[in-house]
Length: 246
Image 1: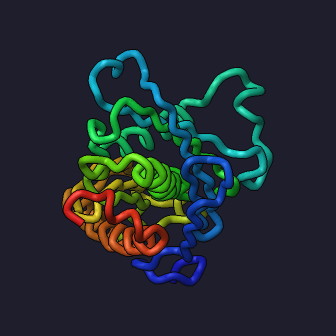
Image 2: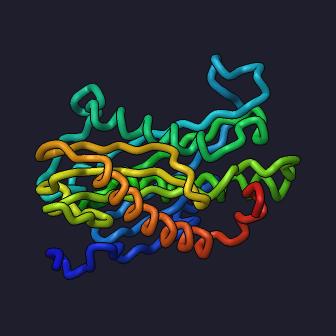
Image 3: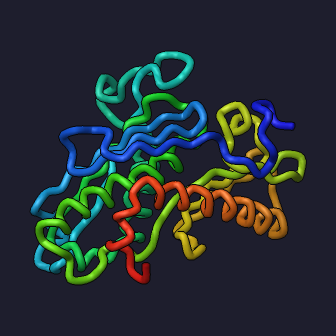
């Protein structure tokens, strides 16, 4: 039995609130156990110089944690004068994941910036941010679609992310902070509803692991992805019109 009483293959309680921010073109607040992340999407009718003239759009992300998102107060990165390496790595991951889910040609030369703010952290903040970012992005695209319909669905598929881990040879789904800080193997997986893998980040925290263990972790993650995508669809059902093949 895990510390919070969950089964090995059980997600924490998840709540997805789309449209949480009144001013952003798209937004989503995700509660995943005691982890809470707010994502807002901002649409601009311009693209970075390296994309200009290509006829396609661009998606980027910024990620940050509030000072009291954790047990002890952490100094704001703005006060330090620079971002930490972890912050840069996570926001690049979020941007890559969301770009992979999109047909960037379909949205034209627009940029969407996803601001991912961790209000409270208890493990899995990067994966929660990806799940919420997808919905914030979809809400923003729906607002455009209602006034200027897209000729081609801009989304290739639904997208989500989840953390899994290996402890004593046993795969665990959706790690909280206590589990994550003592896990033998830590893996974050980004996957589509059709089970296409976008990215895997896996580390043997307490040693190495073999292919059989990796496949067990991917199978466990897939179970979680299926459930989360179901919650995303329920939270924003009108988004189906923007997904190719739906």
